[in-house]
Each structure stands twice: as C-alpha cells, then as structure tokens.
Image 1 (cartoon, rainbow, N blue to C red):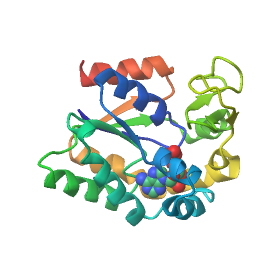
Image 2 (cartoon, helix red, strand yellow):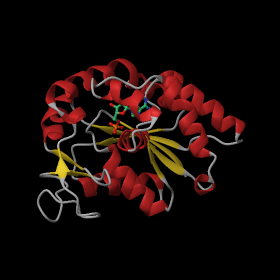
Image 3 (cartoon, rainbow, N blue to C red):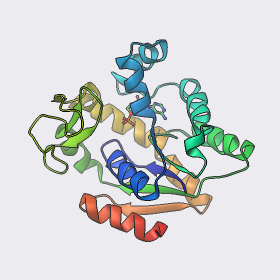
Amino acid sequence: MKLIMLGAPGAGKGTQAKYIAATYKIPHISTGDIFRANIKNDTELGKKAKEFMDLGLLVPDNLVVDLVADRLQQEDCKDGFVLDGFPRTIPQAESLDSALLDMGTKMDYAIEIAVPDSDIVSRMSGRRACVGCGATYHIVNVPSKVENQCDTCNSGLILRDDDKKETVLKRLEIYHEQTRPLIEYYNNQGILISVDGTLTVKDITDEIIKVLGV
Ligand code: AMP
C-alpha cells in the first residue's frame, strides 16, 4: 500500500500516519522528521533546512525530492510506505510520480485529513514534541502518559519553534498557496480520499482503515 497523507500543518497527518504504518506494517516516512534529525545531528542538510523551517517556509524542492526518491528505493519500502509531509508542492508531486514510474509503480491513495483553519491554530499551541526522539503529542488530544515526558524515550517535551503562533500562521498561508492544490491534483488522478479531521483520533483512523480495507 503506497499512501500519501495530505492536510494542513497540525491536521493530524503524523499521528494517523503512525497508526496506518503500524496497521499495514509499512514504513512511515516523514520529511519533517528527516529534517529535524538532520538539524539535531548538525548536518549540512540540517543547517540549510533550519533556515527555512524556523521561518515557517518550505525547504526548497531540490533539497527534498532526491532525499525522498532515495528513501523509497530502500528495501523496507518494497511493500509500500506512508508519506507524511511530502509532497508539499505540485513540482514535488510530479517528481514523485516520475520517480515511482521509473520504479514501475504508482501511488495507491492520497488521504486528506480535512480540518478548518480556525481549529488549526488552537491545536498547534497544544502540540508538544520530544527533544530526544521527536515523537509528537498533544496536551489534550494525544497526551503523554507522564506530563511533559516522552512515552518512548522519557526525554522532555517542548513546543517546537515552528509550532509557535506566528510561524503557524505563516505555515497555513503557505499551505493554502502551495500544498492545497495537491488535493485537486490527486482528485484528478482518482486516488483522493477525504476524511473529517475534526473527529477523534481513533474515529479518523477507523474511517481511513475502513476505506483502505484491511
Ligand atoms: P512537518 O513536520 O511535516 O510539519 O514539517 C516541518 C517543516 O519541515 C515544514 O514546515 C517545512 O519547513 C519542512 N518540510 C517538511 N517536509 C517538506 C517538504 N516536503 N517540502 C518542503 N519543506 C518541507
């Protein structure tokens, strides 16, 4: 199963991608996580990406496309994958289509998690990320078992710089300009699934799995 998660920042793509990846036993590939790991390890890619991420801007397509194309060639992707945060622009989607065509395959579904903008800002302010492993939580919707402590690695939880209000507003603006056109792009390909992202986390997962089939 080859899937793409679509939706505004904070719509819950990452949370759903994790459940779907576990259900279908396929890797969860988050370009945001890849960049954050590079920032943490102080790599050249991390340094370049951080300049854009801290401003709420997209990292340029040329820094993302090859990275994902290489990742999809790895052995663990042979039965499928869930892409989370990629593609984010039409040129990225076109590059993905052509990389998959070269591999003799194509995407199965693009899943849109639809959440009104008005909900996004309040949601993002409740989001917390682990300083150790990058896992994300939400103080109300997906709380950690112990307050401010990661369930997986026990490190502390913080509000990420790019989840701060000003940055969120910028990210939403960019989402509408550059990423939202992908909804029509995948609708035209006949592979768009749209789910109501205001439901509970579990109801959204159930809805997606119902449509995909087990
Ligand atoms: P995310 O964790 O998916 O919300 O990504 C965090 C930030 O990483 C985004 O706001 C962008 O600055 C950058 N980023 C992640 N994926 C991409 C992508 N496919 N294209 C461009 N920038 C990206």
